Length: 93
Image (cartoon, rainbow, N blue to C red):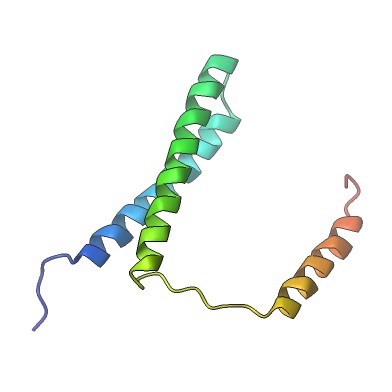
């Protein structure tokens, strides 16, 4: 029988999801700020949200709760080359 209590992992996962949601919202708000003061204020908040999100990610990864599959160096190189080729096709690049 499973407990209805949230575990620490559940809580951190929930908070990380919220931080991602906040980052998306503040990103849009910052881009659409109507004046420089508002832009700077929202940019500072966005930076803080990003830092919190990164700290949560690092904590979860240290505890083994957020696993990332390692990628071969060749795959990274291939993707970077593909991006460079694709980027050359953009008329505004």
